[in-house]
Length: 589
Image 1 (cartoon, rainbow, N blue to C red):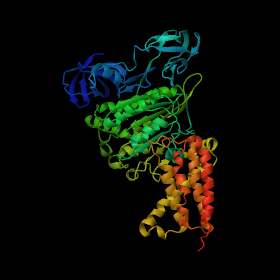
Image 2 (cartoon, rainbow, N blue to C red):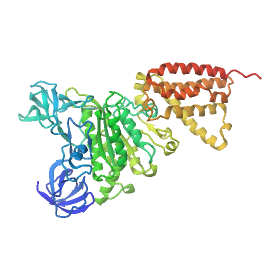
Image 3 (tube, rainbow, N blue to C red):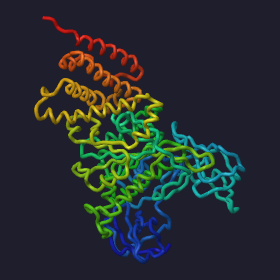
Image 4 (cartoon, helix red, strand yellow):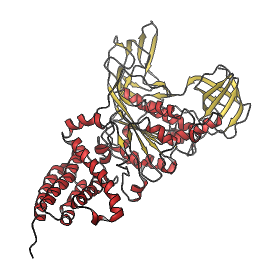
């Protein structure tokens, strides 16, 4: 490609002339330093380029060279446990080369070109294959078996294939294409980040992504392949909630994108994740995690790329048949990057200065999630669940990013600063949050946990809503004005809030709760309410029922280990019966 020359520099936006042969979204190398950029607008022979590195010191007349290909990621063994920046440069390798400061124009291969991987073929020479078919496997980590697939767009007959140790660029098989030409197959393939990877069929979301977080699993569940948003003000626990989901969600692979978040929060992730033990395997959590670190002090344009880089890597593992959980923290920072670039391009601004295409860009991102059957002769079922944090200024979710997100996602976990100030975590507000997957997941919960799961959930939600209405009365005229049945509702709702919905992320037992234990906890709270209600009808005193000693045991049930859940449940139930009977005994003077 012929070189163009810089005619204007405006922060991360560079305008170059003489670029008539370049295409939209081509990757370019800017100046003699070779800074990475991407063409985002063309006018005649002038290209507007967003540069993914610091542009300080660039001047007019410097050369710009188009690579002729769109921004793409390398997909192959070596992705897992690697920490990348927003354009898939491995940060550890860059640190080894340049030290702690990220230099400009550094070109480092995304996958280690020297490391050898043991490739085990799963097909024989002469096998007819098509796009998406698995030709062999590599044991990437102790828990991730990396499946080597025929790249999209290729089909034919495998004429050669060999077992052995290869790096990601060496030929492992030779494909005789249908048109008679040959194509070497390697462990690695490339894919443009802005194009969703194709699949054979999309499945309905009728299976939950179990997270071990009670307020999510029981009240506002997300389906495997579902999309959820966590909006919340500063300090309400968005990042910790996403960390919990990354640690405990029932997913084979976790892709965590720190998009424009504070450096110290990202440092916590980078330091904490390697220390965490994966509860499903007993190994380090990093052995099934890809981290993309793009902190708020990094070039603003790379924020947009980081979201696409992350979801492309997630789609790749989904195509292997894995369940992938993608955490984007936070999409607000990505939208701010869009706003800045839009302003520099002098586009007509939409609401609050965001570009008019904000909603469609968000939709393009979230629509890449889903539970699918992959391409290939024996299509595999994989799922990609996308969970995006939103950081609305001042916690005001009426702002454009939150509203555009809510129009797309089906689960809304609304974090509430007033709950966070009361130290109620996760601070998910049960009155404003919702899940549109609840009805489609009802059958799964009924078959796999208990037939009355949805009934219990409905009764708990009703009690919480009734408590909110009664609180208005209490604020006006005091608790004593309530009737005994209403006071009992307040007591039961308090038990739901404090004993069931409140969950301690840093407690070794309470940090994760299985669905069976969640069911038992719901049963205990509702058993107290039902038995106390019967006792009230038989003349018991509400004051006595409110201070039954067994209520403390119900509250402590969350700290019971999984293997003792059923025995402790039976013990508490029998105590509850005894104490309720005792409350009916009239004191004689």
